[in-house]
Image (cartoon, rainbow, N blue to C red; front, side, top):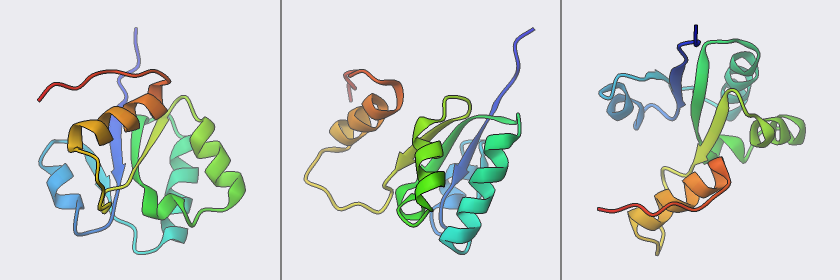
Length: 110
């Protein structure tokens, strides 16, 4: 029987409520250190198959944790810059995030 994994989103408290509406688990740490502790704990647990992580937290993680996050397969940890001001369209940004996470390019149609 296949394991039922959940999705966890680790973002700041301003963005968290929007994700909660989609039915995923949301944690809003106050600091990057707290976010790092949450990620380290959840990487050892067997609850989550995907963790969406605000890149602003990841940037301040220790190099060891940062490398573990980027190499993790289960849970798959997807760093997303939710506060970015970019010249990319939302579709291009999403395509780049997915390409980094799964290793190949997909096309997103609006």
